[in-house]
Length: 113
Length: 117
Image (cartoon, rainbow over all chains, first blue to last red; front, side, top):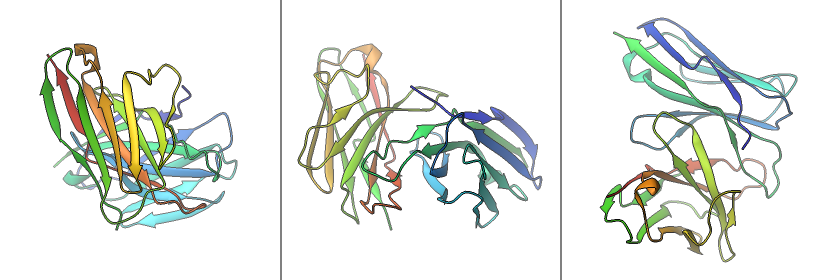
């Protein structure tokens, strides 16, 4: 099935550093979502974006819905060890009955204390 | 809140047996539930979408007779892996959507680790 292009695939940073990751698509999406998954757990929704150009924050996390509707980025400021995990972007084309999400391949984040 | 539970969290079974996994939305009614499969270090792969009271919609390549889905109520969906084989070993995750037309995001359960011997 279709997947989003998510980059980078993995990151290894020092505690306190800022992190940026992004997702791109060849087609337009009406919703962009960012999830975090810890090992052996289900994904947890971090930020949901519904409007082109929208910039939304959740604590140290900030995400933006690209104005072309074909991309989104997630920034994490001042990283801490508990930020470790896999971050997934997901997109949805419409808000109708077909609520299926298209997923990125994930960005694995490691933080060195 | 939007809490989704799964049971069991892990299961080990012999080849040829059937395994049932439950997914429950604990504090909301879910019009739609989704079942995913995830292999190590890979993304989530949607298996099927299930709406309460109707047949599940399976993704291409997913055998509906192999993976039986029952969405009996607005808070419970079950996935039964029939005649399980070692290649069915995987991490199975469900999600539930609240039903609001516009803001209808999926909330995930903690997953079930299935190991078939």
